[in-house]
Structure formats: C-alpha cells, structure tokens
Length: 287
Image 1 (spheres, rainbow, N blue to C red):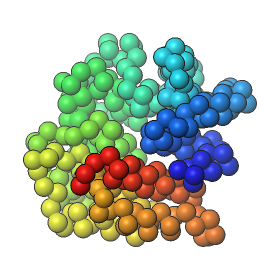
Image 2: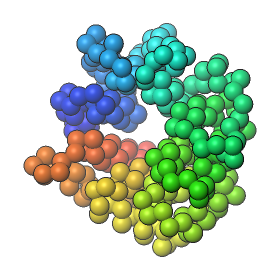
Image 3: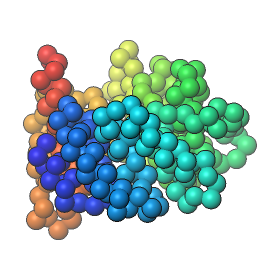
Image 4: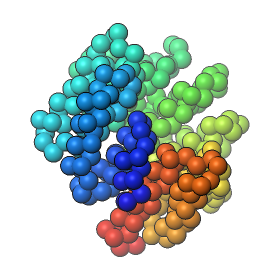
C-alpha cells in the first residue's frame, strides 16, 4: 500500500486518479480522508481543466465521507454529460457508469441496434450506464457488447476493446453469453484483441463452466509481455487466490523497477493494486 501512496503523491493526472481509486477500493478506508483532502486541492488547481477534472470528481465522489459530498461530486460529472458543448462528455458518461449511476437522460434512449450502424465509444459507455437500471437491462447490455465483439465487418478494435472492458465491469455472464464469448475467442483470428478477450473471458466466467487448460495457460502467459500484462493483472486480480500471490509478486517486482528504461508508473500502480487485492483476499478468505 505504501507504493500506491507514493505513486498517488508523486505522479500526476490520470495516474494519480488510478492510484487514488486503487487505495479507496482496497485500502479499507484508511486513506480516504487523505485522498479527499488531496483531491480537493487538485480541484482547486485543475477543476476547470477538461478531461482531468472528470477524474478528480470521480475520485471525490468515492472518497467523500458523506452522502451529500458523494452526490455533489457525482452531479458535477453529470453536469458535463448533459451539456452537449462539453468536450469531455465521453469521460463523464464513462465515469458515471463506473460509479454505477444512470442519468435520467439515459432512461429514455432507445436500445441501440448493432445491425443499424457501427456504435461509437460514447454509445457503448451510455449503454453501460443504462445497465444499472435493472438486471434485464444489464443482460441486454452484455448481449450488445458480445454482438459488437462478434462483428466481423468492423475493424475498429478500439471500440471492441471498450466492449470487452465493459463486460468485465458488469459482472458474471450467463452460461449462454459466456459460451458465445468463448466461441469468439476460439474462432477469431484477431490477435490484437485476443489478450483483452482472454482476460474478459476469465473475469466473467460463471461458476458452472470451465475456462479450459489451454486458454488459462495462454492467459497466464500474458504476464511475460508488457503490452499485455495489464490484461493478466485485471484477470488475476478478480479471480486469483492465495496460490497466485507469489506469481503476482514477481510481476510486481518487474513493473515496480523505476530504473527500468520502459518503466510505466500506471502499470506499477496496477501491479501494486493487484497484489494488495490478492493479499486482502488471502486474509479474508480461507482457501
């Protein structure tokens, strides 16, 4: 946790945001007050800075110690989303979705049809926000994201990566949805998208189904390439257990080496978070 605190205090903008969220999610409340104070200062300095302000407010909406405070900062994000002239509306709706909040404006939208046209990242984030309306809406959203991933006529991997990412956040898929996702991985030749899909497949797997040794082995191998290690960390953080701690420690040691020529503080923070998450699981669950 000390590592994340150091990154929080020494890095800027979105790396600072990510480190703060990691500490909020796995710090057991020990850092929330300090994070709130730090990001109130960030708001004084950068509250008018498009894009980054959304990250500041998202952190404050989680770190605030009162419901009124949480609502105040969430509503700041909402104000950006509802203003069509704001350049960071897409950041706003993504953050609202992450905060599990559905703006009233999203309730009245027609459910998008994947066959009508290619959907934009903004469309996908808006539908993700709608997923919090009900379990039925969440299931429909998962179906939509799988349809986006299945579209063979679209070469827009950026949009497909967003669809894969959203599936991770919504939670476990139904058996049939997960089988469809697994079939996509087994039959697709889209190598660029494969690491993201492997991670999503593992995270969303229902208890009743099996990943398969070959796919699990392939996912575990993602840790050996820095370009793919974030997908390994995302998956192992969600579904890993006590036996994975030593493996994640080795990955963490590599990514936390500030002397490395390709050192990346965001990956360092993600590795520290994943390790902390697994350690917390080890203390809280008897494996």
